[in-house]
Amino acid sequence: NPCFSLSSRVQPDPSGSETCVCLQVEKHLEPFRLSLEKLQDVSARLRKDMLRGLGKHAHHRAAVKMLPTFVRATPDGTEKGDFLALDLGGTNFRVLHVRVLEEEQRVLKMDSQICAIPQEIMLGTGEKLFDHIAACLAEFLDSQKLRGQTLPLGFTFSFPCEQKEIDKSILIRWTKGFNCSGVEGEDVVRLLKEAIHRRGDYDIGSVAMVNDTVGTMMSCGYRDQSCEIGMIIGTGTNACYMEEMKNVKRVEGEDGRMCINTEWGGFGDDGSLKDILTEFDEEVDKTSINPGVHTFEKMISGMYLGEIVRLVLLKLTEEKLLFKGCPSEALLTPGSFETKFISEIEDGLENAKKILTKLALDWDLVDACVARLVCDTVSSRSARLCAAALATIANRIRTNRGLDHLKTTVGVDGTVYRKHPNFSDELQAAVRLLAPKCDVSFLISEDGSGKGAAMVTAVAQRLALQSRLLEDSDGEDEEEEEEEEKANI
Ligand code: BGC
Image (cartoon, rainbow, N blue to C red):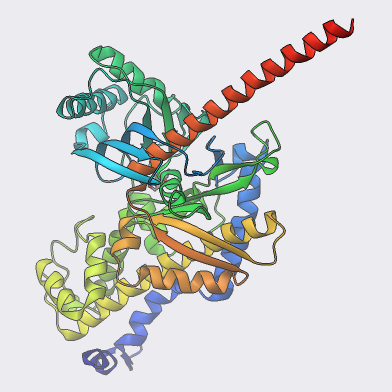
């Protein structure tokens, strides 16, 4: 193993004695290593924060927002019809035409189109953003010959929103590099509809707003009805799950369940994770476009992992533990170490060598091994923190239902989870330790943000239809009762 040579590199330390490089490297990596006890402690803190977020009044101050989604049921297999779906919140914006087939219990993506969102739109005015979305949708309707049909639309908008109804959703704040003016605090459905009306050349049917976690849960729910958790580990991170209505104090009603969008990315925004933040996390936060918010997300998700690794490599270079003490221009440039490099480097030493060369670093074998160790340490922490959060949710569902043992499925998506060579194994192993009374299965979502959004819209339509039928039959019952009363008189 060439990495054995790591322990053979020695360096003088200030006291004059020689110290093995790996010990000095380890000193910098140690704060990333979270013991099982620490993870249990993190999980216990999240449990408390989730309770605060669910509270009727306490939620105003809660770091973990626990947002009601107005999704009250997972699919039952009777949903059907044609839908449009919009997906905004990852790296691209997509428009889709989706068909839900009842007989075959299948969701078909008929067609889809990707539209780039240029940086100037991501950071421009809200009006420009929604005009851009409406224009992409118009182009798609034309290409699919769908103009003229007013199809229901599922809008996957993957940012924290205070949802008032399934079709009324106020953006709390932008995340993941978006920062369009005039949208925070506004109803996103209204902004979309206004942009469509400004054009005046097509219309859409009813709209259902969906967070990507919810779409992910729903798209898996069609295949596996025990799927009651949705999780994303991609550009951002978040999870949703089915909570008992009686615990959702902000929404009227005690019966049944509602899907809660936890927005766990905000965990730690009140300082509760201070003890586990490293100097590198603090730097990433400080230089982000939203300092002080989404603390947990910044330790975990794809938008930030590469930058954390870059900062660690830079520190080790400054300490002359790497690259003969010479950083390259690339290593000095924020954002230059892409998160996908982490997966590639961990996948094999040859990849590590190629990437270090690409970054114009003067590396030797020991450097390549250390770089791999850094990547592994940062991605492991991410997987284990996600596991702690997911275990909190699974444990909560189990105690909510008074069960000794819970069997449940998590619908999951996101580039970090999908593409990293051992992220999913590490996450699952840690969940088993942190939620020993839960048997958690993982189902990779097939296009949750597209098909799932259609599914949410379809379920909302089914429930609306059912409640209309119920009202009608209530009406009939009332009429019958009145007739009976009259007859008695
Ligand atoms: C957003 C969430 C979203 C997650 C994953 C976060 O930045 O706040 O709403 O679900 O990213 O896309």
